[in-house]
Length: 462
Image 1 (cartoon, helix red, strand yellow):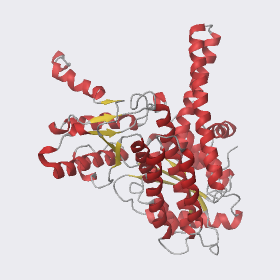
Image 2 (tube, one colour; image 1 turned 90 degrees about the vertical axis):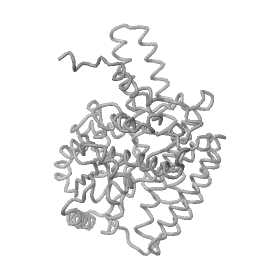
Image 3 (cartoon, one colour; image 1 turned 45 degrees about the horizontal axis):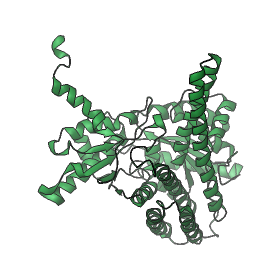
Image 4 (cartoon, one colour; image 1 turned 135 degrees about the vertical axis):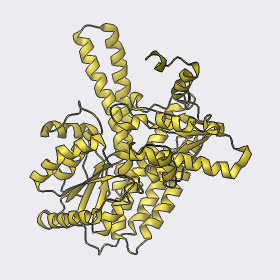
């Protein structure tokens, strides 16, 4: 079958475009297009980018799904369809607006990736192939960061400011998580319907402007002060006469549980049936990546010490020191801001990844050595259970491997504890019986609260 081998130079060049057109490149000078995942966090992220002189915006989401289906087989992960549709729809609208002056080289598509078995690692590569099938879109660059180096932002900014840029990006995602938790805390108890949604839109715009104004100058106190005022305003929306409702924890694949259109606005649906919901944070995943890299470096250090590889030991020691500092900063900054926020309003605290690993070791039902997002989901569910939550929801794309593993491991564990648990897989269709399943789940959560009450309103860092 010699004739089927790649011998044509054009074929080799087409394959090389996967690396040449997906890289860490300087984001200045082009419009940076950010796909929406967590809406608030992504808009704050765009504000942080703009603060460092990058023309960044979050693309409108959900309107290009038909376009994505036209250029895919349907077997891909649902988030891949949504993000592909978003970029195709955005560029289509730009071509209509600009006409002959449209030039794809003026844009850069920001699409991170992950290593390991998750299909997320192939999104940007597949989308690169699709974009290359359009002659006028071949020059569009895809800026990609990866879990392999902890989502390092090197080369995207000058060396002089890249560390400050990374700190601002981390803070923007964390403040996005806090704004989400404020919304979930106040919306089930708002004095008038719609007050919480109106408030959070204004809060998102205000904080995005704050990141744009203060990020480059490292004026994080200016950002903290804005956030403090917003939390105080949000607290006033709560009607103290409304009794507390069953507390429902949410975990799962990070995109589906964060993207309201993809999960068919599941949190609002649960709230409509009487829940107060706490979703796992975006920063939890960022901390998990840093923690796993540190964990791997420590394992490598111990191995090289046993083998007396002194040169490798020195390299591993430097890596451990650097990663320890990185994780320490992330957790310190997170603890500082959450303590400030929780001093005003009793929003849910966030997990500490090292504690989640200890939870798994104690239960002996999964292990961080296996990896994937299942580590966070399984341990997060166990932590919800230990802290008096009245039910847990696992949200994921249909056929998602890590979330299917989570379901198989955690479902019997929740059954033994008598805690309501439900899987909510999603694709582009509406599943029959979804509403009935959620109503049944919420009935069980209500019954659980009547029997056991609500022990705590937060997941406590230990």
